[in-house]
Every structure is written in C-alpha cells, then in structure tokens.
Length: 166
Length: 297
Figure (cartoon, each protein chain N blue to C red):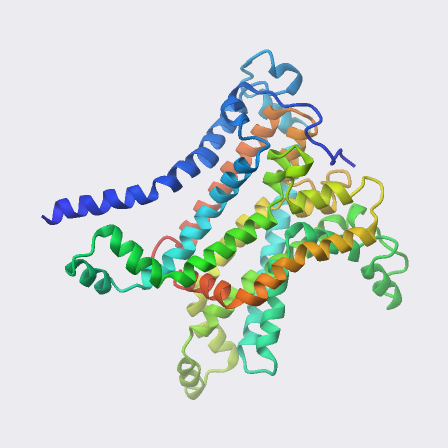
C-alpha cells in the first residue's frame, strides 16, 4: 500500500508557487478554491431561474425609474430566492464533500476538513478499527441528512428547474 | 440610443461577472497553464530547488515507457463507461417506476436520494465495510446463499477491486441521474401517452417514440455530467483501494496523485494530467458535437 498518511512529509518548495504559497495550507485558500469549483455548476443552475423571470417585469420596473442595479436587487434576486437557496445548499454540499483539495492544499492536521480528516485519522495502513470508522461515518453524514430532510424540496426544485430545459 | 444601451448592458454584465472571472482565472486557468508548462520541465522534488531545467518530452516518454499511462487510461475508460451505462439504465428504470402512482412514492423518492447527500469518502468507507474480507456483509451473504465457496478480499483482489469501486460509484451517483430523469418524465404531458394508446401503440413503442425523444435534453446533459464525474473520480479509489492491487485501480486521477505526492515527481504528474485534460476536453467536444448539446431546438 502506498504512503497515504502524509503526502507532505517533505516540504514542497517551488518557485512558481511562491505567490500562492501564502494561501497554501490556510482556511481562506481552501475556501477560495472550493468556491471557485462550485461556480460553474451554480451558474448553470441559477440561469434556469433567471430565465423564468419575464422580461416585461424588468422593463416595467425600468419605466418606473428603477436603475439597472435596482432591477437586479429588487426584482431579479427576490424572484429567484429558491434558486439562490438551492445554489447555497449545493455549494455547502460540495464543500462538505470535498476530498481532493483538502488533501492537496492542507498540511496542518487542525485545518483539515471532514473527509480528509476521517481518512487520515481513522484509516490505518494495516487494519482499521471498524467500529470507529463506522461511527465517524455516521456522524459525518448526519448533518447532510438533516439538511436534506429540511430542504430537499428546494434542492430538487433547484436542480430540475435549471436543467430539464437543457 | 439603443446601441449605447446595449453596450451599457454588456458592461454591467461584465462588472457582475468580474469576481467569477477573477476567481476562475486564479484558481483554474492559471494552474492549468502552469501544469501544462511544468510537464516539459524537470519537476522532481530533489532537483527542483536548483531551478528550472527544461526536459522536453522527457516526462511524456517516462510515463509512456512502462505502459503506465495506457494502463491507467484503460482502467479509467472502463470505469467511466461501465458506471455511466449502469447509472443511465438503472436510473431511467427507477425513474419510470417511481413516476407511476405506487404507494409511498414520496417516501421512496426521498429515500432514493439519500446516497447523493452522503459524502463521497463516507460512502467509500461504508462500501469498504460491506466488502470487507473477514466480516463484510457481501461475503457473509454470498457464502450463506452458496454463491461463493470461500470469501473474497474484494478491495485487494486483482479481478474484483475495480468492480467493487464501481459499485460504490454507482450507488453514490445514481440518485442524481434518477432525479433528473424523473424531472424529465414529469414534464411529459400525460395526453401524449393516452393519444398513443388510442392509436394502438404498445408500451415499447411509446417508450421509444415518446419517452426517449422527450427526455433527449435531460439524457444528454446528465450522461455528459456522469461521464465527466466518473472520469475525474478520485476519493473513492483513494479511500477504498489506494490504486492497488498492483495498479489494477490506478486511474488517471490516482496516477497523477501518486506521481506528484508519492513519487514526488511533479513533472510526470503534470504530464499525466495534461494528457488527461486533453482527453477529457476531446471527449466532451466530441460528445457535444455528436449529440448537439450546444444546439437548442
């Protein structure tokens, strides 16, 4: 089996990474990367909601003297609230689920997020303590289950509104 | 008047897009360009401190020499093809089943979606437990019903490791496929089927002439997303098999990670990921060309 536990045993020094190296192994760096990874999916999803808002509403707001920014904040955003809630939930899910970025960008144990934390703390090379592994798995999944139970209508509606049209 | 207005519109849009453009530029495009560039340099950790050494296609020669990359490519394609096909067939069947009026359909739908909110690593762990060699449920049941004569060490068996990961991937991503198919099915007007039945069409005919054409859009989007997702799958492999046994589950993702963080050669890792990138872009382009995703009817 390959060395799983600490890929960063040797400190990585690389000239090109100097600029980013300040963001490596920090919370804010991980947050920025994960947010970026969620952007394409969120745009695709929220577009379905924006498309549903009739152009005539925006036009009449403009005639009534609403500025371009005002149309966005007072008409488009309130009307697509379910969509905004859906992309919020998805981004949360993506971040909760993330494994790759936390594994490669974070070295300090205390900064690790759930997925990588579980795999590094509880998975030994030779044998696992399965009781602990299953306990921590259930604990890690429960928050998502609750989120899903309370918000599944928005999540499903959000996903299907944006995509069924193709 | 209208012209300056459309320019204003465009500028406003650009301003709103600016944060997204900056973030994707900094976190996606620049790293991709750098990674492709790095694949032509010596990127071994022990020599990297001496500065940039041009290596030409040396990194590519290295990964092609032992057939490593071709093997990984085969594994990846096999995995993506099998999982996507299974997900599509079962997802569509499940969606059609739950689209009919059966009892407790609402609860069944919610239950069917639960795997999808389970974090990937956790689903990997739960499946590793089910397929565990000594105490796992899979071995227990298969032995009990006499299908197996002796237990299989699923995740470390040369023939069974890849199918084991496939099962976990299938389970994890099926709900997404199912949900999209179900939404598509619900957008088909019921009169369509009634009219077809009156005209004497059987269930098979109406499936191929009504259901499939109506679902076209949904199918091509979800299948493309599934292909991309499975092509990139990493956490399941890394948690369940670590790429083993004897590289039988080393996909391109696992190979890239191993080259970079196990062999500590960022040059070959960048070479693998460049090939991977080109392939994925080619597959996506070919797919959109063949199935016309970008066109709108």
